[in-house]
Amino acid sequence: MKILSGILEPTSGYLKINSRVNSLIELGTAFDSELTGYENIDLFLKIKQVNKTELKYRVSKIIDFCGLDDTFLAQSIKTYSSGMFARLAFSTAIHSYFDTLIIDEVLSVDDEQFQNTRINVLNI
Image (cartoon, rainbow, N blue to C red):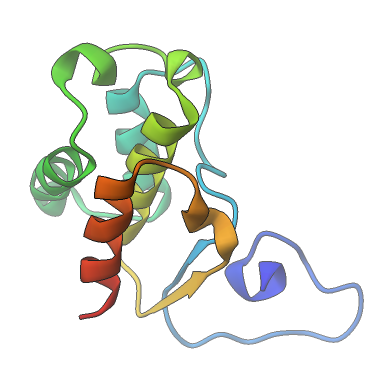
């Protein structure tokens, strides 16, 4: 799964993917613990090549979905609980561009309400 997600390179052979892939194998892989929640959202979306016209819309969707308020989003994510981190990372991942979403067991962290919200989103 890590090779399909682009996290690791194959040690032999090659892999050709003809779609945009996003993964939830290691939540927050592209996050920087020194940056704020807002800065990490922006960085992640830029890495995923979200264009400027879509950026504001996607940021708004991420913030609404993760349920974290401005006070927390303005803080460094190193101060977040594991549940807050999972909320932000999951929300950011599902609101970026992708054709294929690869999911591992990373979704077991956080509170019951958010787990139910995730289940509803992934059942579409």
